[in-house]
Length: 243
Image 1 (cartoon, rainbow, N blue to C red):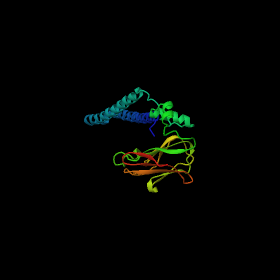
Image 2: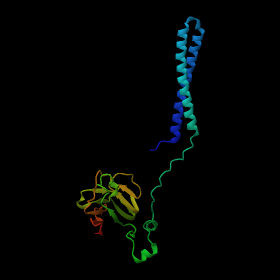
Image 3: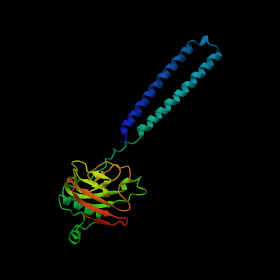
Protein backbone atom coordinates (compact mmCIF):
# COMPACT_ATOMS: atom_id res chain seq x y z
CA UNK A 1 0.00 0.00 0.00
CA UNK A 2 1.38 3.48 -0.90
CA UNK A 3 2.47 5.72 2.02
CA UNK A 4 0.14 8.59 3.00
CA UNK A 5 1.93 11.85 1.95
CA UNK A 6 0.34 13.87 4.77
CA UNK A 7 1.37 11.32 7.39
CA UNK A 8 4.94 11.18 6.03
CA UNK A 9 5.15 15.00 6.09
CA UNK A 10 3.88 15.18 9.68
CA UNK A 11 6.32 12.49 10.78
CA UNK A 12 9.26 14.33 9.17
CA UNK A 13 8.09 17.67 10.58
CA UNK A 14 7.84 16.23 14.11
CA UNK A 15 11.35 14.77 13.78
CA UNK A 16 12.79 18.08 12.57
CA UNK A 17 11.05 20.03 15.36
CA UNK A 18 12.44 17.64 17.97
CA UNK A 19 15.96 18.00 16.52
CA UNK A 20 15.57 21.78 16.42
CA UNK A 21 14.56 21.92 20.09
CA UNK A 22 17.50 19.70 21.08
CA UNK A 23 19.88 22.02 19.24
CA UNK A 24 18.39 25.07 21.02
CA UNK A 25 18.95 23.40 24.40
CA UNK A 26 22.56 22.65 23.43
CA UNK A 27 23.11 26.27 22.39
CA UNK A 28 21.68 27.49 25.72
CA UNK A 29 23.98 25.15 27.59
CA UNK A 30 26.99 26.39 25.62
CA UNK A 31 26.02 30.01 26.22
CA UNK A 32 25.81 29.25 29.92
CA UNK A 33 29.29 27.76 29.82
CA UNK A 34 30.57 30.85 28.02
CA UNK A 35 29.08 33.09 30.70
CA UNK A 36 30.83 30.99 33.36
CA UNK A 37 34.08 31.40 31.44
CA UNK A 38 33.59 35.16 31.36
CA UNK A 39 32.84 35.23 35.10
CA UNK A 40 35.99 33.29 35.92
CA UNK A 41 38.07 35.09 33.32
CA UNK A 42 40.70 36.17 35.83
CA UNK A 43 41.52 32.58 36.85
CA UNK A 44 42.69 31.61 33.36
CA UNK A 45 45.75 32.56 31.45
CA UNK A 46 45.33 34.54 28.27
CA UNK A 47 46.37 31.59 26.11
CA UNK A 48 44.08 29.05 27.80
CA UNK A 49 41.14 31.45 27.56
CA UNK A 50 41.80 31.98 23.89
CA UNK A 51 41.98 28.21 23.22
CA UNK A 52 38.78 27.47 25.15
CA UNK A 53 36.96 30.35 23.51
CA UNK A 54 37.97 29.23 20.01
CA UNK A 55 36.80 25.66 20.74
CA UNK A 56 33.44 26.89 22.00
CA UNK A 57 33.12 29.21 19.01
CA UNK A 58 33.65 26.32 16.60
CA UNK A 59 30.98 24.26 18.35
CA UNK A 60 28.53 27.16 18.27
CA UNK A 61 29.25 27.71 14.58
CA UNK A 62 28.61 24.06 13.76
CA UNK A 63 25.37 24.04 15.73
CA UNK A 64 24.24 27.25 14.08
CA UNK A 65 24.86 25.72 10.63
CA UNK A 66 22.77 22.71 11.61
CA UNK A 67 19.98 25.00 12.76
CA UNK A 68 20.11 26.94 9.49
CA UNK A 69 19.98 23.75 7.41
CA UNK A 70 17.03 22.48 9.46
CA UNK A 71 15.16 25.75 8.98
CA UNK A 72 15.82 25.67 5.24
CA UNK A 73 14.50 22.10 5.01
CA UNK A 74 11.35 23.02 6.95
CA UNK A 75 10.78 26.01 4.65
CA UNK A 76 11.12 23.80 1.56
CA UNK A 77 8.61 21.31 2.92
CA UNK A 78 6.13 24.05 3.79
CA UNK A 79 6.35 25.45 0.24
CA UNK A 80 5.70 22.09 -1.44
CA UNK A 81 2.33 21.98 -3.20
CA UNK A 82 -0.26 19.63 -1.80
CA UNK A 83 -0.24 16.26 -3.49
CA UNK A 84 -3.38 15.07 -5.17
CA UNK A 85 -5.17 12.26 -3.34
CA UNK A 86 -4.44 8.72 -4.52
CA UNK A 87 -6.65 7.57 -7.34
CA UNK A 88 -8.41 4.31 -6.54
CA UNK A 89 -8.43 2.05 -9.64
CA UNK A 90 -11.88 1.48 -11.05
CA UNK A 91 -13.60 -1.75 -10.11
CA UNK A 92 -14.17 -4.22 -12.93
CA UNK A 93 -17.72 -3.92 -14.26
CA UNK A 94 -20.34 -6.36 -13.05
CA UNK A 95 -23.04 -7.25 -15.53
CA UNK A 96 -26.28 -8.21 -13.85
CA UNK A 97 -28.05 -9.14 -17.07
CA UNK A 98 -27.11 -10.98 -20.25
CA UNK A 99 -28.16 -8.05 -22.46
CA UNK A 100 -26.04 -5.50 -20.56
CA UNK A 101 -23.00 -7.78 -20.80
CA UNK A 102 -23.50 -8.41 -24.52
CA UNK A 103 -23.84 -4.69 -25.19
CA UNK A 104 -20.51 -3.98 -23.51
CA UNK A 105 -18.80 -6.92 -25.24
CA UNK A 106 -19.92 -5.70 -28.65
CA UNK A 107 -18.45 -2.29 -27.89
CA UNK A 108 -15.11 -3.84 -26.97
CA UNK A 109 -14.80 -6.13 -30.00
CA UNK A 110 -16.19 -3.46 -32.33
CA UNK A 111 -19.28 -5.38 -33.45
CA UNK A 112 -22.31 -3.80 -35.01
CA UNK A 113 -24.91 -5.28 -32.65
CA UNK A 114 -27.85 -5.37 -35.02
CA UNK A 115 -25.95 -6.53 -38.12
CA UNK A 116 -23.88 -9.21 -36.36
CA UNK A 117 -26.83 -10.55 -34.38
CA UNK A 118 -28.73 -11.03 -37.65
CA UNK A 119 -25.99 -12.22 -40.00
CA UNK A 120 -23.62 -14.17 -37.75
CA UNK A 121 -24.43 -14.60 -34.04
CA UNK A 122 -21.52 -13.77 -31.72
CA UNK A 123 -19.76 -16.51 -29.78
CA UNK A 124 -20.80 -14.53 -26.71
CA UNK A 125 -24.52 -14.94 -27.49
CA UNK A 126 -24.96 -17.61 -24.84
CA UNK A 127 -28.36 -18.43 -23.32
CA UNK A 128 -29.01 -17.20 -19.78
CA UNK A 129 -27.87 -19.72 -17.16
CA UNK A 130 -25.34 -21.44 -19.46
CA UNK A 131 -21.55 -21.14 -19.70
CA UNK A 132 -18.97 -21.87 -22.39
CA UNK A 133 -15.27 -21.49 -23.03
CA UNK A 134 -15.10 -18.61 -25.52
CA UNK A 135 -11.36 -18.04 -25.99
CA UNK A 136 -7.94 -19.37 -24.94
CA UNK A 137 -4.29 -18.31 -24.99
CA UNK A 138 -2.18 -21.37 -24.29
CA UNK A 139 1.20 -20.01 -25.39
CA UNK A 140 2.70 -17.65 -22.80
CA UNK A 141 5.08 -14.83 -23.73
CA UNK A 142 8.79 -15.63 -23.69
CA UNK A 143 9.59 -18.83 -21.83
CA UNK A 144 6.35 -18.57 -19.86
CA UNK A 145 8.09 -18.26 -16.48
CA UNK A 146 8.30 -14.47 -16.35
CA UNK A 147 4.77 -13.77 -17.53
CA UNK A 148 2.51 -16.63 -16.50
CA UNK A 149 -0.54 -14.42 -16.82
CA UNK A 150 -0.01 -14.15 -20.58
CA UNK A 151 -1.63 -17.58 -20.82
CA UNK A 152 -5.31 -17.84 -19.94
CA UNK A 153 -8.70 -19.37 -20.64
CA UNK A 154 -11.80 -17.25 -21.07
CA UNK A 155 -15.21 -18.56 -19.99
CA UNK A 156 -18.47 -16.71 -20.58
CA UNK A 157 -21.83 -17.13 -18.94
CA UNK A 158 -24.74 -15.09 -17.63
CA UNK A 159 -26.04 -15.55 -14.11
CA UNK A 160 -24.27 -18.86 -13.42
CA UNK A 161 -23.18 -19.78 -9.88
CA UNK A 162 -19.71 -21.30 -10.41
CA UNK A 163 -19.51 -23.03 -7.03
CA UNK A 164 -18.11 -26.52 -7.62
CA UNK A 165 -17.16 -25.83 -11.27
CA UNK A 166 -13.68 -26.93 -12.44
CA UNK A 167 -11.40 -26.12 -15.36
CA UNK A 168 -8.63 -28.56 -16.32
CA UNK A 169 -6.13 -29.31 -19.08
CA UNK A 170 -5.78 -32.45 -21.18
CA UNK A 171 -5.29 -35.46 -18.93
CA UNK A 172 -6.41 -33.43 -15.87
CA UNK A 173 -2.81 -32.79 -14.83
CA UNK A 174 -3.84 -29.34 -13.61
CA UNK A 175 -7.28 -28.41 -12.23
CA UNK A 176 -8.63 -24.97 -11.36
CA UNK A 177 -11.50 -24.80 -8.84
CA UNK A 178 -13.75 -21.77 -9.17
CA UNK A 179 -14.25 -19.80 -5.92
CA UNK A 180 -17.34 -20.64 -3.88
CA UNK A 181 -20.35 -18.39 -4.56
CA UNK A 182 -18.63 -16.82 -7.56
CA UNK A 183 -21.33 -15.85 -10.05
CA UNK A 184 -20.33 -15.19 -13.63
CA UNK A 185 -21.81 -12.24 -15.54
CA UNK A 186 -20.16 -12.03 -18.96
CA UNK A 187 -16.58 -13.04 -19.94
CA UNK A 188 -14.17 -14.10 -17.19
CA UNK A 189 -10.49 -14.87 -17.81
CA UNK A 190 -8.67 -17.47 -15.70
CA UNK A 191 -4.97 -16.59 -15.63
CA UNK A 192 -2.25 -19.09 -14.77
CA UNK A 193 -0.18 -16.88 -12.44
CA UNK A 194 -0.85 -14.77 -9.36
CA UNK A 195 -3.11 -11.75 -8.98
CA UNK A 196 -6.13 -10.32 -7.20
CA UNK A 197 -9.43 -11.91 -8.15
CA UNK A 198 -12.13 -9.60 -9.52
CA UNK A 199 -15.50 -10.07 -11.17
CA UNK A 200 -13.86 -10.56 -14.58
CA UNK A 201 -10.38 -11.90 -13.71
CA UNK A 202 -9.49 -15.03 -11.72
CA UNK A 203 -5.96 -16.23 -10.89
CA UNK A 204 -4.78 -19.84 -10.64
CA UNK A 205 -1.65 -19.03 -8.59
CA UNK A 206 0.58 -21.56 -10.37
CA UNK A 207 4.39 -21.22 -10.20
CA UNK A 208 4.84 -22.45 -13.79
CA UNK A 209 2.95 -22.72 -17.08
CA UNK A 210 -0.10 -25.02 -17.20
CA UNK A 211 -1.17 -25.17 -20.83
CA UNK A 212 0.85 -26.99 -23.50
CA UNK A 213 2.20 -24.65 -26.20
CA UNK A 214 2.04 -27.45 -28.79
CA UNK A 215 -1.68 -27.90 -28.31
CA UNK A 216 -3.98 -28.62 -25.41
CA UNK A 217 -7.62 -29.22 -24.48
CA UNK A 218 -9.44 -27.00 -22.01
CA UNK A 219 -12.37 -28.70 -20.28
CA UNK A 220 -14.98 -27.03 -18.08
CA UNK A 221 -16.99 -29.25 -15.72
CA UNK A 222 -19.96 -28.36 -13.53
CA UNK A 223 -20.46 -29.29 -9.86
CA UNK A 224 -21.78 -32.73 -10.92
CA UNK A 225 -18.48 -33.29 -12.81
CA UNK A 226 -20.33 -33.15 -16.12
CA UNK A 227 -18.50 -31.58 -19.08
CA UNK A 228 -20.32 -28.37 -20.04
CA UNK A 229 -17.72 -26.95 -22.45
CA UNK A 230 -14.53 -28.20 -24.10
CA UNK A 231 -12.20 -26.69 -26.68
CA UNK A 232 -9.02 -27.71 -28.51
CA UNK A 233 -6.23 -25.29 -29.37
CA UNK A 234 -3.31 -26.32 -31.62
CA UNK A 235 0.04 -24.71 -32.58
CA UNK A 236 -1.56 -23.24 -35.70
CA UNK A 237 -3.66 -21.19 -33.29
CA UNK A 238 -6.84 -22.86 -34.49
CA UNK A 239 -9.68 -22.87 -32.03
CA UNK A 240 -12.11 -25.76 -32.21
CA UNK A 241 -15.14 -26.13 -29.99
CA UNK A 242 -15.49 -29.78 -29.03
CA UNK A 243 -18.60 -29.26 -26.96
